[in-house]
Image (tube, rainbow, N blue to C red):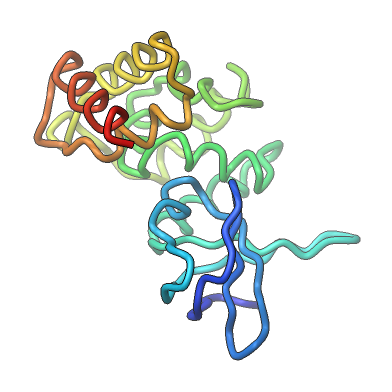
Length: 190
């Protein structure tokens, strides 16, 4: 099993990166958060999970071990494959996802393409006891984050761009309107 990669980023596309390790290029599928942290030509250190099926071997990479561990919890749920798990991790940071699960907010998880209400409820049911308890003190409120995401999307930004901008807004900025204003400034500078 390949558990970790440490090498030079030689190529990136919209959902993966190729890491060169001593002349061998490993393609790792990554979340949007991890992808944004990888720079072509720079060194990368990724925790990995190898998925082996009949005719494929896919490698999934994560900057943070916590994100990899959460990915493994997600794919342990019947009906949630690695691509869906990666899409869930691209929705928000792990702390926000934990908060959605602990507060049983299925509507937040349904924002991921391919995750319907039943799948979201199944994720909550199976992971609620495994993810720990998150409280409002752990950062921004889940309702604020969801409202800000929907507002940016309604203004014409893609969900992906909206998520990335909101991830860059610090947790010290609270309130839906303030988070939207800061995210708009970030999107305007992109």
